[in-house]
Length: 390
Ligand SMILES: [Fe+2]
Image: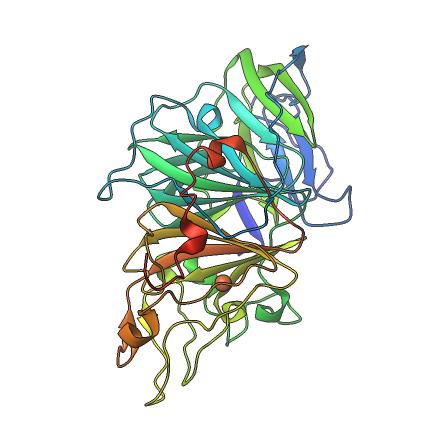
């Protein structure tokens, strides 16, 4: 949860002379969003972050998102086997494979197990990275943020970073065209998390600051910004900070810390909200008590998601309302296509008191297109899974 953080050494007054032991001036950077009108941090580099030796084309393959036509419920079998994350021999950036997207959000999957020498910077919006399994470190100028299974990593637009796995890692990456934030209704006027919020500031982890990397050389940064791409070669290591402070930095939240709100009767998805972004709302369905009215039906009702497309990523548990779904499955239930408990699921749910499911969801308010990488793994009969006898 972004609140004020101060790490390392910063001068007593911003925008003033700040010198190292040898008398050299440190280079101040304002790391801000929406121009100069949103959250920001002040970073103090040993040397100028602007020292650019070369700018080269970064040829990225254009991802074509096909319309969901004919409009139907879809299941993409992106599964993992018995909790083993795939070993892909790739870096996090090379592994990133877009599956669905629209102008507001691109949803990608990444199976990676190799560290990266190259840095990455997405200046087109915030990224939300959910770690299904694996472990490693998100390295950035702000420090090192260790990650583990079930972490959400929130990376502000423009952050220079890289994901360094220590174990094979599966991540689902949501790249927004805007800011990803805690829902407004969970924050009070001071920005603090409300008492009724399903998480608290102490559940959020910030990077551990480390000594500046005092190295000059040639460092590659892959930069992308709303369809424009380049590889920058810079002279000074991007992590040469002596200190920083402010409100804008990567942070982590582990969904196992999410304290779900439950009720006597079925609670709709917005109760399970985690984050929000322009054109998108994120939720988490975590192990919890189910509805406790003596006659409660503990699975969702039938619905057609009018005015939003719903994408669920299934992490673990029994997924009691879904047929044919396994760990790592992704379903797309688009606006207008009816879905709900599959045959027998309502009856099977009666009398249950708990669910052990873990799934994360995003609703997008504009239609999602589907990339070929997803279509290639589609269970094309999924839309028929609500028929009693198949
Ligand atoms: Fe749904």
